[in-house]
Length: 156
Image (tube, rainbow, N blue to C red; front, side, top):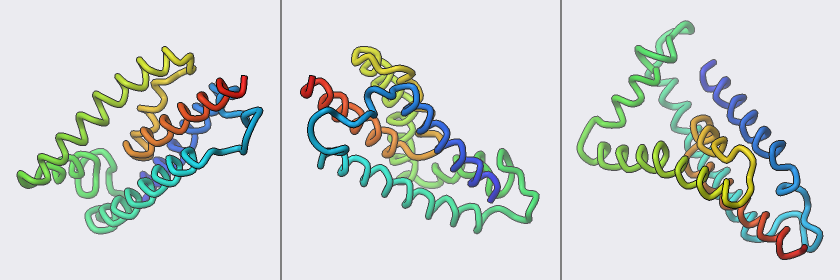
């Protein structure tokens, strides 16, 4: 369970780092409300994905980790077992390879290339956030950032 707490703290820290690195983007736009309806939708989807992921991750740790001193890197209830279980049958393997490619290849390529074009500072942090939150949260957070940036540009 300690590994889950560490993940939560690291996830919050990375999200804070993204916001702190891009204060002007996350400031309240000159016109309109603090958040647009579309930003609310993206944040709701991202937060829901974290909730669902945590539900299953807590179940995984509770069902597979043995004893208070289990190793979060290898052995029962660890990352290595989690990854092994992702590929336990062809259906799970199909979904897992798709998720892995989206999260580990497309998310960093897209956010880094697009983020640099948009002038975002440290866009690679969106990928890092996905390691501690969820892939869906990282994309939703990035899309909300784009909407916020667009609102600032429109108000200027």
